[in-house]
Length: 116
Image (cartoon, rainbow, N blue to C red; front, side):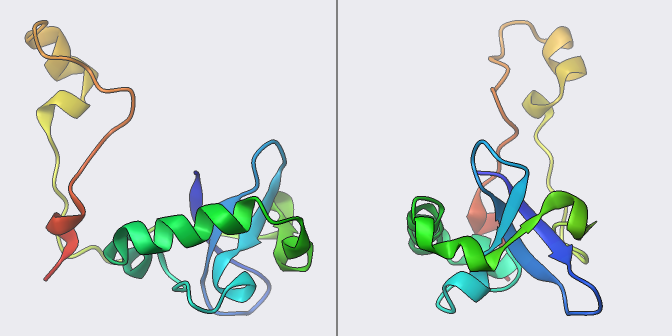
């Protein structure tokens, strides 16, 4: 699932997920108010938020909460992160220095790192 922070016109920032196979975003909070409206709260919500968002992406009735990617302004996913944590194995250059390390398919981090 690809998540985005976005703005539509002069509205406050929203959290969206790309509808698979389209160039459209679903406004997650508008489609299900139980979901947060920002990515940091979504990550902190853990598996509960992820399961709800995945259900929305499979629901054809959410069309009124979707927008074309070209119609919104994309924002930084987490505008003011408290910490930025990096793992060397997430970087190709570190992998080249240590070929025994397995290069992950996607960068990873632990959601526990985001708790304060």
